[in-house]
Image (tube, rainbow, N blue to C red; front, side, top):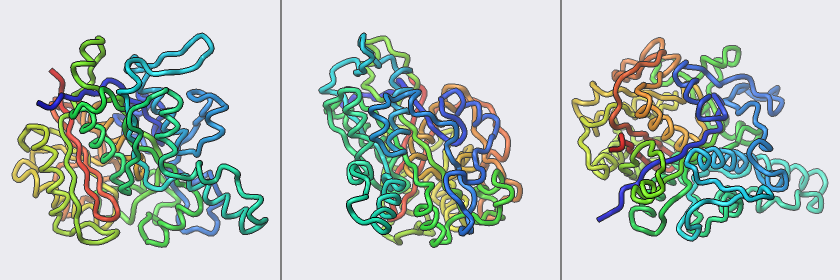
Amino acid sequence: MMRKVVVTGMGVVSPIGNSLEAFAASLKEGKSGVSRITRFDTADFDVKIAGEVRDFDPARWIDKKDYRKMARFTQFAAAGTEQALEQAGLLIRDGEGRKRIAGDPDMTGVVLGNGIGGFEIVSESFRKLHDQGPRRMLPLTIPLMINNEAAGNISMIYGTRGPAFTQVTACASGTDALGQALDLIRLGRCDAVIAGGTESCIVPFGVGGFQMLKALSTGHNDEPEKASRPFDRDRDGFVLGEAAGILVLESEDRAKDRGAVILAEFAGYGASADAYHITSPDPEGAGGGLAITRAIRDAGLRPEDIQYYNAHGTSTEINDPTETRMIKNAFGDHAYNLKVSSIKSMTGHCVAGSGGMEAIACVLAIREGFFPPTINLDNPDPECDLDYVPNRVQYGTVNAAASGSLGFGGHNGVVVFKKHG
């Protein structure tokens, strides 16, 4: 019999708060974290807005000798991990301030999702290569830019010796990382896993690349907080964001044995591929609907047992009606009784960081009995006819919640959480 898996700790670095408490408060307030880009000069760009992480001081969570050798996406992941381990009661510091994880380090793993890697490192090293030659490139270019740097660093900081994996499935990476972690614990390969997603690519190369795809919003540069508007007929593209969402997952038996506060049960995961197009989802929503169905079945639930669905909800012309069809394919008539929302209306699209962050939103919804709003939903698209919790938080009982992520390449991942006990 497979072991039950529970959540015992969570940590967030995001455009709407760099702590769990700040993040939860912003969700309830419907607070936008989208603003004018400050990290570079946007004079030559059509896109001038993003969901930047503000007031982030890595020294609050990470030793200076460590964070100076990290790309920004890894700093986010390390900060989120520190928060999550603190909440889980698994962080140990010795008399000299060195850190380690409580429990058996050989049975503790790390699985993180990251879509793009250290874009700021790539950009800076290419600039130096072009302008000054190869001898002026950053000495740590390769270890800083690679996607697996975050998982490797977290393993080294906390002394975990279980598997340290990196999941790369574009915007589904964070969600798929959680699914992989779930299986590691269920199968007994690990007793605990630090899992989630992290991303930081708000640099000229990242914004320029997405701009060339015509994927980003350009119509609200003067009103950034109104730019991300999932399911609204006046949406004109997604807003790029950056974030990390990290969860501590444990076997239920281990969590109970050590007296941990259990936040929720991580009940199910489902995945699929569209086999359709490199950047667009299958317009019929068949692949995404299949991932939802698989996740609900894996959780041992029925569609009508789910009260809240955290949508991928990117605010693009193609995604939003397609995702609406996915939801209808999976939930049937219950789709019209379901609360659906996209917190990307507040955070922007944080690529791999979204999956971990949105999973945390589901756990918060279960524990605190609320449905995060979809802000800026002023004129609903007629093709998007579900209850998207428009503009204001709603309160009610949430016994089970699901979160879906869709990535370039046709990757679909869905996770299901439910009340524990």
